[in-house]
Amino acid sequence: MTRLFRDIFPPVVVLLAVIAATELTVARGWIAPYLVPRPTQILAATVENARELFTATASTTTAAMAGFLLSACVGVSLAIVLSAGGWVQRAFYPYAVFFQTVPIIAIAPLLVIWFGFDARAVIASSFIVSVFPVIANTLTGLRSTDPALRDLFRLYGAGPVASLCKLRIPFAAPSIFTGLRVAAGLAVIGTIVGEFIVGTGLGGLIVVARREQRVDKVFAILLLSAALGIVLFTLVNTAGRLVMRRWHASEIE
Image (tube, rainbow, N blue to C red; front, side, top):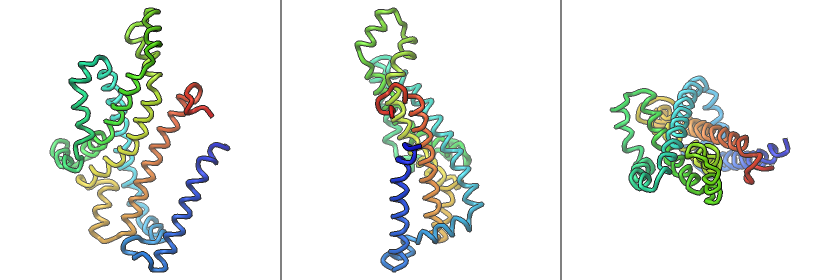
């Protein structure tokens, strides 16, 4: 409970201070309300459109979770394959980098052509944006296994599968969870971008609210998107603590 309070209290204080400062500056006319609405206006817009926002948030959450889980499974699997040998990495790793360098907003229309105007295109967008950090961090962790431990496993006759499951993956766990933490936020971003094109979820609502000049509604949607990313990140962070808290220095209280 003490650690929970220590982790939550400082950001809550900062959040309340930002809300109060924003309310004051906009109310006094120092910032135009059509640029940044007052927090009370954002809250009113959230309450006014609660049903619509809830439905859109549920859709975005489902797509983001699906894209994140897909990137986690595929990313870790690909990293294991790439770590099998130097020639495998040299041959295929540049294609993995493609997922990091391609501008998702440019290929989002192609995803609609390939998958249609439904959740599949949104999930694909989320997956493309979030998979590379998982591949890169997992691969780094697998390749960083202590050579002395690898020699020890070979000395005792451990095969490749046993070495992978009992040494290399546990040794790479901190790097894997680092990649998953990054992917958690990127999955939400990729989902929103996909929804811009498809017209569903929170991304679709942002497009509609912008056309209606509803800045307060846009901010409400953005805050919900940020909250979704924070929740997903927190879930991954909690999973990392549960897995590594008894043996890794970064998680020992």
